[in-house]
Image 1 (spheres, rainbow, N blue to C red):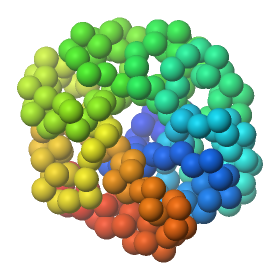
Image 2: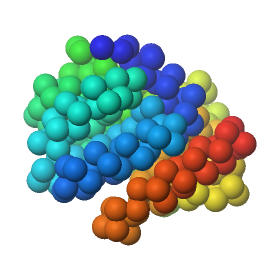
Image 3: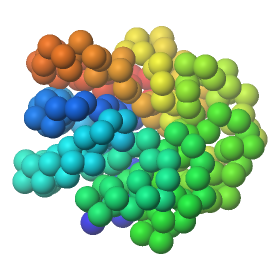
Image 4: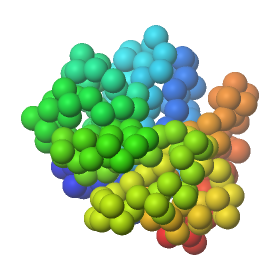
Length: 219
């Protein structure tokens, strides 16, 4: 199993963390295949539906053969029970919308990368006290790049990634990196409901390549 430092470095190198959930496991696999073809080597499958756990097991089983160099983490982990369930299914890292010290303790015991979501300086400080190497600014569309600019001097050396509302637009991406983030989370702006429903895999591959290029230019 890869170390948390290796997975973190993969996120930093990629500059983007794609994330999504879909009930259909086969469609979910095709989405990941498209992302992989575009150059993605680390991504987050979110725990946002009743089939998340079973789908995750299916995806890990398929991807260990098709894409052994792909790191697949699980997002929207809010409890110790959820963390343990997905770790048993092979999650490479954990992402949370909140700071739950119980989840942090599990990640520490397993020596796993844990990325908690924060919205205030107090939450950021609490996440740091629980050994968060990378912190998610969430929801980023509410906080905005100005928040990142305002707090980066308070938390020098801390790595941040905004999630929620980051757009595939040069100005938007460049503003976030200029504000001080190390990568950006890409959810529905990249893997939209239309892409999922219409199975627009070629379009997704094209848009992912474009997003990665914009990020490369903006870093």
